[in-house]
Length: 275
Image (cartoon, rainbow, N blue to C red):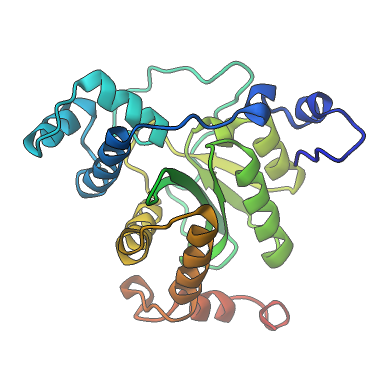
């Protein structure tokens, strides 16, 4: 992580981490009130119609009275980190120096805690502005192991979330992500490999087998975020901390036979770690 109090110059720290200097000095530009309203609607429509691309979302927004073009929708989707989820030929190339790793879970039975972790990022609207949420989730038990908020969609808060999860719960055998630039960066893949963890990546733009992460985002937004118009990042952090405690320890899951993620996670780990 970048430490501005360290005697080593920030530019050299960025080079060692393999991250862009521009991302370190970037200050988020304000968005207009109407763009903020549109982004909130795109977020909800994406949850309801995850297959909708910019063209379809433009039509849906126009039905709601927004005067908007496809290019503007596409621009806002890019800023939000939102893309239509559907299986399509892979025609894009990774950024220079960013390696894409194969998907390792297609025929793998995931049967225990800490066998596979998944990580993803989502957009969260606030009363004024927005933040990004990154979370590390145990695949088998659905338990949220760690999470972080950021006002920019960069690599740093992803690294912090992974380091926190490893520090608290050990290491998984496999870490699964999408092909976002945060997860293909040298800093992120280096952290995963340095801990002896295998890297798995979903196909770009494809329906993901870890659809439970999308379900997590739906739960977080409808059960917490949309009910509270956070006035600040601090308020968002407090609300999410409260919600994830509830989600892990009290919220029953049908996929877990109505048990909570905590129950299944700790029951499937050695007694020493559970203690």
